[in-house]
Image (cartoon, rainbow, N blue to C red; front, side, top):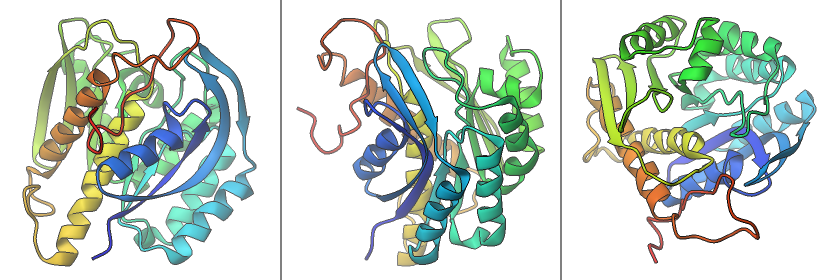
Amino acid sequence: MRPPLVLTIAGSEADGAAGVQADLKTFTALGSYGASALTMVVSVNPQGVRGVHPLPPEVVRSQIDAVADELLLDGTKIGSLGSAAVVAEVVAALRARRDRFGTVVLDPVMVAADGTALISAEGATAIERDLLPLVDVLVLTMVEAAQLLRRALATTIEEMREQALALAAKGPGSVLITGGALPGEDVVDLLVHPGGTDLLRARRVAGRSVRGAGTTLSAAITAQLARIAEFDRAGELEEIGEKGSADDMPTIVASAREFVASATENAQDWRLTRTRGGHGPLNHLITLDNR
């Protein structure tokens, strides 16, 4: 039996904490085979971004087509795209052969951890107008939700819910808004899915400044959704629940959040840099080696 196959369409981040590098490590840790199509090269380390180097749109499309032509994909995760031209190529690839990409999860990375913009205003508009109708799951921060909707940043859980419903109305079957920007001891994420609305709470990890948590969360969700496709092929659904049932997404998202929390906690004692401070990585390989 082959493993689940997952494609990530995102940027390459030099220090390995986020982007394609984090996606591929997450896929491996959760038992999936990862393929990639790079959209940009980001020169970055824990102290911040030094340069963003977009790839030509035709190069992005060539990578996507090469993978979709041959690999039996169970899922696709879309991350940082950078420009309206790249968004257009991704949209065209999905429209041409939507059935080749499996379950599509969009994590519209717009701003780096240090505040560097990773997509143009035109690109954000293209995502909202053209890409949202083609994806199954949307995972984003409160800031990204406000930007896509051209609204003020939500300040309450009810406002988060309104924005999640507004985004779901544009196409995605499920929308997860992470609530790290809300004050409080707990992080509260809000999930709108076919079965209703769920609030997911977790204690904040104190004293840890990380980069790549959102990337890892959406990658983990994609990998878990790909596992459902694998179970369908094998005729056994195990613990995740029958595909399409109301409890699929809360179970999958809760599992992904646990993975992110554990990966964050288990990297707290790492010393990978010459200087202190900055945004450190997660330990994506905790399922393989927890030493």
